[in-house]
Length: 476
Image 1: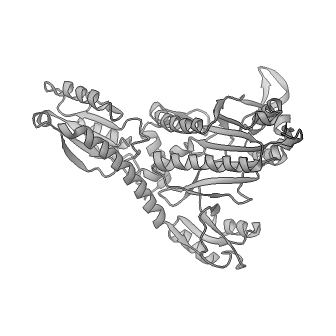
Image 2 (image 1 turned 180 degrees about the vertical axis):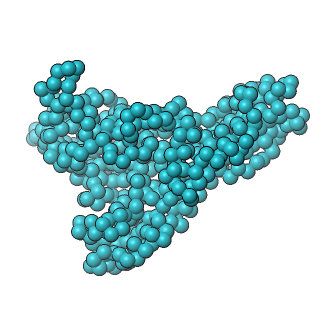
Image 3 (image 1 turned 90 degrees about the vertical axis):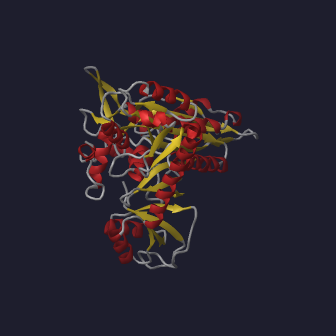
């Protein structure tokens, strides 16, 4: 029975894309909808998003931000106000042209992002230095008409939060931009056990309309990179387009300095591809909707189910615990919860009750441990902590193994083909070199990391003197 269940999942090494599709559907994270590129997030998938969302929301509020909600629709004239911004999003926007049977006088955009909505609002409510800073965040859905789609990673509609803030000075805006990038990095590393590289995007890769874009980049099991969160410093570009001004302490009119930052359901795709294996999902305990699944063995025998329910009650103070008391066979249950990535399975049957013990099986290594009942709470907490740190370390080791250095373009190409991953290489800063690298390797610049290294003296592409080290990779 066990083999029957798992054989439906394609091996990662055989076809990684198919493995991913198998896992998101068979682990009950999503179902496909009747609209191409749209997904139904099922209860298990949404519970996972809820855990991430709640933890991030708490940290956003801790840093002084307030939640607001902006409209779904943007008038075309409003979107046109910031030239670079509208050009950046034009190929992806969905238009509303009719209300009922009547053609609209002005087309509406279904929001691909909400910068212009926040800017219009800020221009109405910011007047004085006393109104600053404005630290707003929105939890919402957005729509981007993507050509190629994949569940969580790239869908027509996705869920996210977008922070939009306004400040009196450039320094304050920069401080905010980096602070929120660090919040994202902490969520990835502490909650999702995903190690990230923090850095700045190149001019080519930055957000449309931004002065500077900062990113956290993570590496997937197949050696491709995933942009896992971005934070943008807008300077005064949007403020000038939307006339967002305030009177300073000297009574002079000044433009505000703005930021924007976002974190999306795409991170669930990262979690799947960083930690998953051929048996399905592997979810870090801190993110898991259910941390411990109790599976009663020979549950038809007297006292077994009662004992299992008592265990659930006593353990719920230290972990998120559930029980499967259905009439499915234990082997089926084992495979079901391995597929769903539940960190710990607790098995208990008549012999265990007699011996005052339970069996704990950890999802990350599939190792079994017998634990006396009087030590169960302590051991369970220790085990969950160990799984969390093991997953992080495993992902970090994988990233280190898949990170190499290239000094010339042929070497960069060769390393990307032989062992896909992050390639550290120097760059002169010229767009022509960046474009040539993409053209010849399909790899893009992922970021100019904050932690710089001088891996050579010259640009990997043109051979001229270079002082910027860049992470390059093929990406999702």
